[in-house]
Image 1 (cartoon, rainbow, N blue to C red):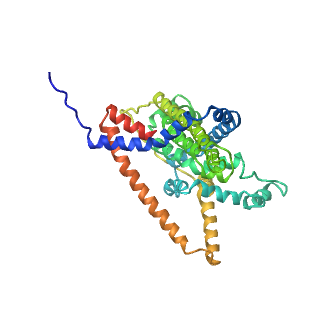
Image 2: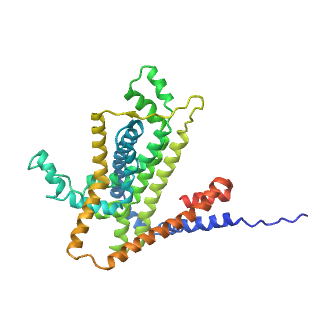
Image 3: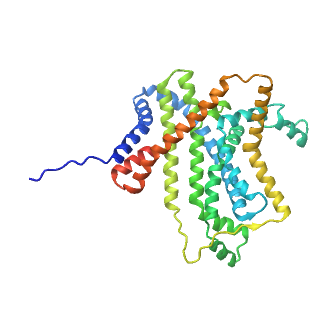
Length: 371
């Protein structure tokens, strides 16, 4: 009887298994803690906290998604279909809002939107002395901050899709009598739907998992409630239960994104493929586009950074910057570099398994790490 030889897994597969298990440990801990929790805790949370948190988290994600779609699509369309002074610079300027942490952006807007603040004075000049601006500690404030922080996710993927778009489809639609608006909504947008959905779900997952901005703005979501359970009530079991509900919502978003992608597969024809050529703009159009770009960039990056620079200069001139401040800067830079290097090193074997090892072991490693 022939003997069965055991084959050891390759080093890449073994490394992928270790990475997948390490990345799945938090999920396993939350799942075990929540499943083994006292049913009374689940009943209390489900009748008091979960409905409100679920509504707040979903409504916040949807509100941010609407603004992200509007900003991302419009900005990508302008910069890929029109040529005007400075259009090449705006390509990378609109990515800079991703460099500002959400809690830093929220902190600056608590100052800008406060009663008697800068934006309220501007608004009262326009609308009258009795006019008031919405509070940053509200649903509108949370949506504004997180939308300004995450719209580049949709913009980047929409810009890439528009740049590689086959304009032959639009030309065929125009020959049938469709105007530009009809062609845009009936032809252009449906064909880039996979890219839009991918960017949109990425932004939604970011919003659902964000803690810094919602905690600073005191807007009740799952992440903020988990923190309150752990630090205020010292109830790790209840925190695990709320975390599991949030993870379940994230899984719904992920499966929804995959379902949309599988139903939205489009193929470019090779016979007549032409990339879009940006059209030159006149002075008035250039002024309108530049004003719109400046407004978005100023709100998402320019105004907060100028405010931070102003505070830094004031603190430096008053001698309020302590020597340990530079240590904090070094810690941030070094930690960022180490984390980025570790992320790349961990991603290389997983990417290799995803592309070169289409086996059950490779699929387990990739899906486990992705989860």
